[in-house]
Amino acid sequence: MANLQKEDITKMQIKRIENEIRDTPKHKATEHYVGRLRAKLAKLKERIEEQESKKTGGGGGYAIRKQGDATVILIGPPSTGKSTLLNRLTNAHSKVAPYLFTTVSVIPGMMQYKNTDIQILDVPGLIEGADIGKGRSREVLSVVRGADLIIIMSDIDRVQAIKHIAKTLESSGIRINKKKPEVKIEKKNSGGLIIHSNIKQGVDKETIKEIAREMGIKNAEITIKESLDVEELIDAFSKNRVYVPAIFVINKIDVGNFQNHEKFILISAEKGSGIKKLKKAIWRKLGFVRVYLVNPDAEPDFSNPIVVKSGYSLADVAKKIGGEFFENKKGAKIWGNGAKFPGQEVSLGKEVVEGMMIRFF
Ligand SMILES: Nc1nc2c(ncn2[C@@H]2O[C@H](COP(=O)(O)OP(=O)(O)OP(=O)(O)O)[C@@H](O)[C@H]2O)c(=O)[nH]1
Ligand SMILES: [Mg+2]
Image 1 (cartoon, rainbow, N blue to C red):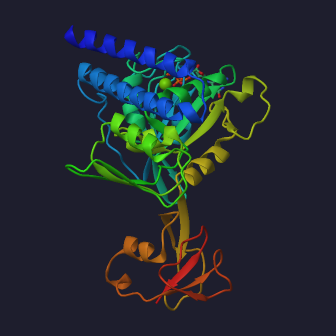
Image 2 (cartoon, rainbow, N blue to C red; image 1 turned 90 degrees about the vertical axis):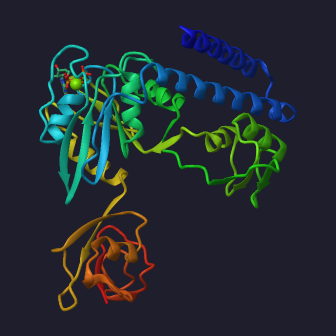
Image 3 (cartoon, helix red, strand yellow; image 1 turned 180 degrees about the horizontal axis):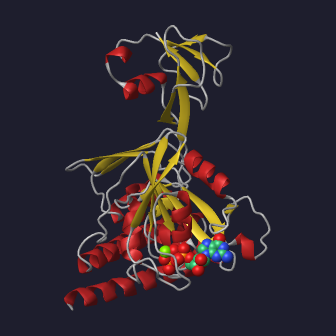
């Protein structure tokens, strides 16, 4: 009971600050003030999260073991065909039925694609506009936080739901298709706040300090490596933000018409259309890259693939393979994509490109 009251007070405070932000004219002179209000709001929302998770006994309730090279979570409103899609993509048999809330827990499946094992999780449907604490959304959102990729899926009759769900994720601290702000925070015991930034910031230093203080950072050296707005600063100073890529899928295109749109992948989970494209998109979005190893005395070809992540250097590739054979490598010859000419000699710092053939020496 005591908890509930505390929560109600926090919710009232949130409302009040939201109104205040709404009613304040936005310009240079009020920026400082609004920035502080926004930070205060973020802090209160964090508190609500903490209070809610105490009530439900910690973060989630679904114990799910991550397996394979990456984990993808499939979320969307009830009865949009999530389980049908899981069954189509993987070896799983998740129950499918023409009524809402068929799936009541997490059902995992494994998708094999280009030498990669991708775990896909089917979860209960999210209620439209559901915020924290409603239905199973708390449990689902805690699984979302641990995923490497989110598929937000709706069907042809409920396209708008994708936007609503994206908003729900946003308001619970999950940032989709966004880069983590480049900010380093070194906490200190005293000395107040020192802001380092070589880049011109849109927000002035005093406001940055106010925001940090509101977020509970009192003594620290903060290094900001890119230009950030107020929301991004709040994100950088928050404890509970996660950054996860997402793709948007519309199902059941077999029973309706939808103008093709770049933002969405259109599929029919039941009939199987669009599935190839979706698999490819999943793999791409997870940042996988396939390269091919060439033995010292062999001709370059595609017979020996290895899956790594984009951004990997050749040294990372060698490390991943491990074993004695790949110790003390000095460089590599490369062919195909990324090579200026066949057999180009490169250093181990060279970044991998999809389709590159590599012979270490
Ligand atoms: N026409 C059509 N119906 C589909 C398609 N995919 C799924 N369905 C139907 O939609 C209904 C719901 O499918 P499910 O896979 O159970 O949906 P879900 O999203 O897992 O539902 P919950 O677990 O309740 O959230 C079933 O009757 C399916 O047969 C599709 O591509 N086209
Ligand atoms: Mg289901």
